[in-house]
Length: 278
Image (tube, rainbow, N blue to C red; front, top):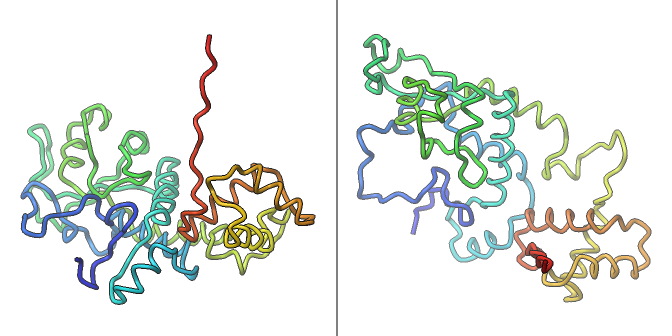
């Protein structure tokens, strides 16, 4: 059982990727989180900060609340929230809106590398080209701290970059991240901003009364995710509501409610359509 200082992501793995063996030391060729300069953030830390901003202030999802009732001092993270934040950060990096750097010590030089010998703190971070960022393999939608399944093709034929990516850490500059974070926050589209959102254009169709109506039907055992969205839509219309949107919008609302609450009764299973016989 992790101690109370550890952050455990119950749904989508821990913040650094795979669970580590505490009795196994870090390979000497791999840089550790301690090697990240103070003015940089490992990607996992940046994702955690973004997730806190996107979802902070909302009630705890049910799976987290259930465990906290037993293990009150355990610090927990919720996988779907972190995964959503990780996808958003990766999308920004792939569009060139947030620069990704690889940080590594001098001993990662290849035979053809002309980097001079100097202390690690004097090595400047290497900016990863956007074309290479697009080739990096994601883990649950996020870029991991340590790139996975690398090849010379991934690095665009750059042997030096491949060597750096093989043993280095991926990070963002703290000042760049703060500027991007504030610009995203200013859009007012995060779930944590729903109650404070000032509508400047067309009001959202996923209104608070409609959200409450869906949750009421679920709590009254009149609908759950095993039933069809068309059934939920029909129940909402039959209740006399005038604000019932399309079935697709209702489906998106149910998905959003599941992300926020973790209630398994709201988890829709995508049905695979049977292929027509030829």
